[in-house]
Length: 262
Image 1: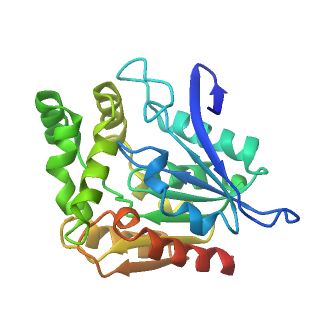
Image 2: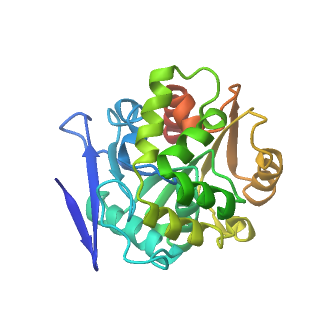
């Protein structure tokens, strides 16, 4: 299996490239969200990989990447450095960056702090005010991460997801180690990308849903319009808030159109 060594961390990565072999395609870097890993982007890849070199990876502590050593393991700087290293190693030094859920927070900070590496920014259901860890962690500590995934999945996926799909997502997210969850929630509760969002200057696409199931959605969209005026904002008419999971084909289609314009 392919791993990239960064300091004391081994990052698992996967590259899909089905472009014409005589071309030199641009690259796309995909950054997953909390309790996810590379398979979360599975349905996006066939669409993207015909036109782009697609780089997926498991963030530290998730999937097949190195476990976290302690609760203080995560920092914005480390997450950004890991993503940047993948772009320089495999993306030709510059890439279109896509982030889902809290993975989009890393994508935003990457675009802000290392603008030379980011051609465009695509954000799928990225909350600017991330959930606070207390209730989630309490459930995980008492009942396990998989139980938390099952408990919180209905509003995430909405009513159109078949039962088999629901279980697939529960198993994917429920496989996350409790040590990773503790460290990640400690980090994510401290980050405030809304305060510096205006520093992102690259073209941006914001994908969201019309779901009323997340109270932050409306205020976040107002903040995106105010702080990221160059962004194209698309709200899909679905009732689950994780748009990258509920409608991956439509998201990929919209993203491809956005990339083609930039």
